[in-house]
Image (tube, rainbow, N blue to C red; front, side, top):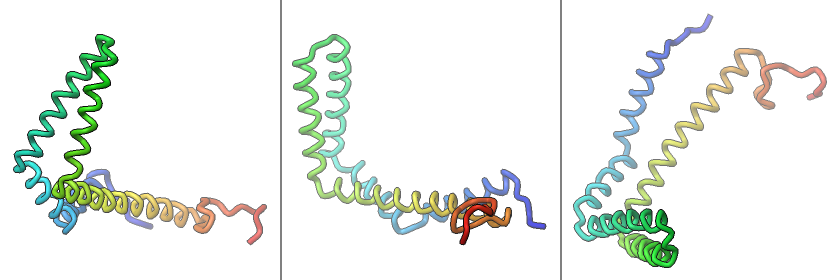
Length: 139
């Protein structure tokens, strides 16, 4: 008979995996890039300006000021474009993508492994991904 794990066992292993993930090269690079972003005065000024404009856009939309709203949205777009041209921001965004890929890899691996284990434990068909062998399908 196989071992049955508790939710606590699973949570403990998930925490262990999260600790391992936090100590990868990808996450280390992400943390360093984020610190540089946080310390970059011009980037922080631009982020603050974007937030101010977003609040203004919400108010303008609420009051139906469509022309003024369009101008504010254009300013927001221009600020986003300008901030995206900064090499440090580009590196930060690349590091976000790398960390997200790593998280997606973990999610997909867990999902596939759980599905395969269920199929195997029920003497199913791994190729088809079914938990029963269908007598109507010939091999």
